[in-house]
Amino acid sequence: MRREQGLDRRAWLASVGVALACRRQTAEPPVGVTDPSTAPRVDVPGPVDAAPEVAIADAPYPKTPPKELVGELALHDWALPGDAKLGRRAVVLVPTHLKKGERVPLLIALHGLAETVDEEMGAYAWVKRYGIGDGYAHARAPETISLAGLNKMVTELRVAELRAELGKQPFAGMVIACPYTPNIWKAAPTPDLVLDAYTPWLFDVLLPRLRAETPVNDKVAVDGVSLGGYASLGVGVRKLDSIHSLGCVQAAVSTADADKWAERIAKAFASHGQKPLHLLTSTTDAFRQPVEALSASLKKRSVPHTFRLAIGPHDQPFLRGPGSLEMLLFHDRALR
Image (cartoon, rainbow, N blue to C red; front, side, top):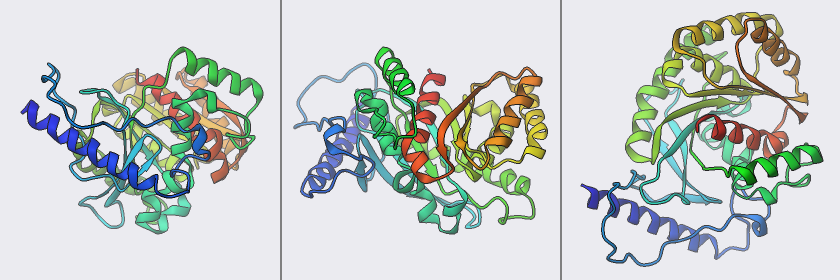
């Protein structure tokens, strides 16, 4: 069994090498990396040698070759069984930099409202529109973090903090699953009904395949932006027993519902234990006031969480700047 697993991984890595070689034939920068000169190097394995098997069996890797490379992440596009109104597709990003047998946490990242109109657009939102590849590359190579690299939506102080923190404790990496996220305000009469059905799809359909075909360990994080931030909180309170960290980026909640959300989170924590919780908003985010109200309400209930106010509006350039990086960094720390 170990030998078969090892061969599967070698074949997968070889396919990554082929994809990388094909990508190098073009003059365009790799997807998800703004400046190819700052991208971390991807080591492509050479010919398989006769090295003895190690005690630890290889972690599983997707059986099919990646569609493309996003920096140090191999992109896989999965079709899954499910309801067309809820979800049937996910983009899965698997690190190519892991050591033999190494497993890493899983981040499930949910997208926003604009991309709910199309399954492909939604599944690819974090890669094609939100710059999660840029965030991952910056986290892996902190010397590339700069004002310009984060779309000038950061202070010099925060740049120095990020570089220092990542220099002291390097970013270990994670598998990132980007499933299509339904329009929770249209797919059923109420958002709760949508999330009641969507949450089992994430954990009973998507998660088992991730565990069978990717090098994930037992740590699972859920996060999302805007509509996806609302959904991530909803998934979190429903499945906190299976989640190890939870977050939302510019969550599309309302100030009027801040107390309700705080109460639901507090009850989930009381039932299943406290989990690292991250609330990220920004200076001109349309949902800044509701997220601040949620944080204040959580404080009143003595619910521990991390609140961060970044610089920028509620848009894709913010996500391609500090948004994706801050999200990745929080869960990397929380899941250790």
